[in-house]
Image 1 (cartoon, one colour):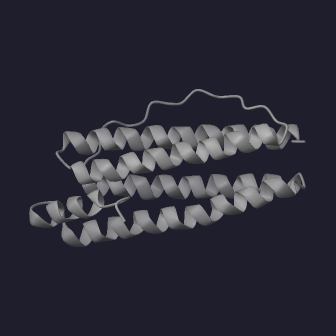
Image 2 (cartoon, rainbow, N blue to C red; image 1 turned 90 degrees about the horizontal axis):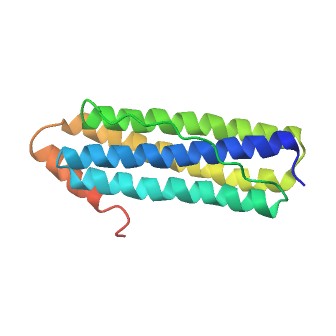
Length: 164
C-alpha cells in the first residue's frame, strides 16, 4: 500500500509527464509552422513517449493500491526563437525531469517502498537516454547551423526517428 507522501509524489510526476507531452506537442506545432516536418515528427514521437511514461506511473499507482488524482496542466510556450533554441529548451526540460525523477526515487527510499524503487529505476535509465538524445541533436544543430542545406538535412534525419 502506498504511503500518502509517495502517492502524492507519484501523482505529481504523472502531472509532470503529461505536461511534458503537452510541451512536446506545442513544439511539434511550432516546428510544423516553420516547415520543419522532421522536427515536428520527432516532437510528436516524444509526445507519445511522455504520455506513455505518465500511463506507466498511472498503472503502477492503481496496482499499488493508490489513487490517481489528475492535476491541471499549464499552457506550454508556443513560440521558440529558432531550431537551436527549441532543442536548448528540450535539453533544459529533460534535465528538469531528471531532477524530478531523482526526487521521486528519494521519496521511495524514504518510504521504504521497494516496488516503487524498482519502477523508478526504469525511469532513471530512461532519463539518461532522453538527455543524451537531446544533447546530441542540439550539438549537431550548433555545428550545422540553422540555415540552408544543413538544416534541411537535419530535418530529414529527425524524420527517420521511429522508422528503424
